[in-house]
Length: 381
Image (cartoon, rainbow, N blue to C red; front, side, top):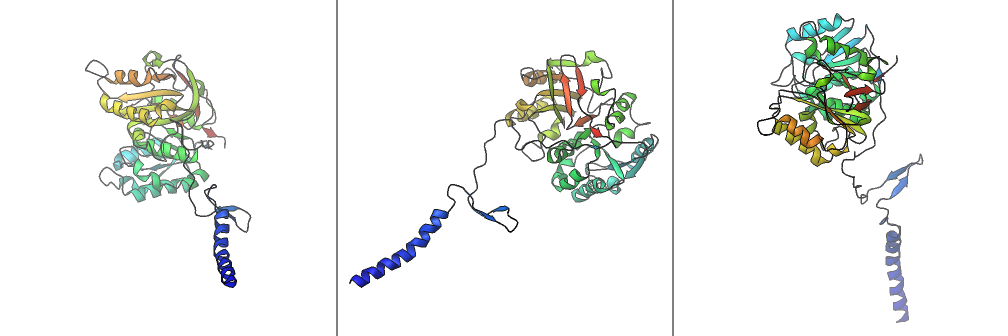
């Protein structure tokens, strides 16, 4: 009988002891185990994931990347023209090329600019591949988007961001290209440019004198215009309106409001923490502008910006009078935001427009109605 009891105890110990040792070594509190590989680095083993950190309202999900600058543009350089959104007729594209060549640059035109598929310049895969190829091409020093329209948001997850980071280049566009500008800056830190495209170069002899004044100099390491970028505007400083006074310094982000709104909640949305927001739009009714600004407010983004610069809102009528106009919408969202807000800045869908460096530090003085570039958007070559 005693021998049977000792046998039972021995069997129980043999079964229980390994299980106890397993649970004592189990990473219940740590959440995950780690193992050391031959090189000495710790690798995660499958296990329960740590809870995702709760972010304060309006805070970015990741730390801002260090700014990357493309090399400055010089006469004789090759400018690539690519169509990541909509297409353009051949005659207009040829005029754009001629006007750029006349200014002393070479031009490389993508093959897809005529491959129209409805409102798109060809299939998503092809448009993304062409933009990726232009970034990888060492002969191309700057990339000018053909035009806006629609299509840029569809290729955001097809762009090769690591390759773009390793091959920084000047990238210029606006309107629908806003998605690509902010997507690339958010994912890589590259300073990109909100400005006229091949479409503007295809009209007459190209850019207007005002637009040209604030286009080529932004691709140089220094300019006498940086301190008062855009100056008094094409119509004079009195047409600029201070919605909320004060000064702010921060990284400039933004662009077309309609396009930005569709990126909220994605990895390609513009940064907010420590930034100054630029907004513009075209042919949108005030209630639509209201809806999109409210989306920014509810997302927590709008309250996180250090300042707001409002560009042209062309044909976004009525301004006032008929119920709630565009200016009433601006007053509602910006007058009590608690940060400097300046409206009427010459950037966006208009003939005379300033090229803005998305990702560069600027100073917004809403009281003096002045914008200054605090750093060179490109680096010396």
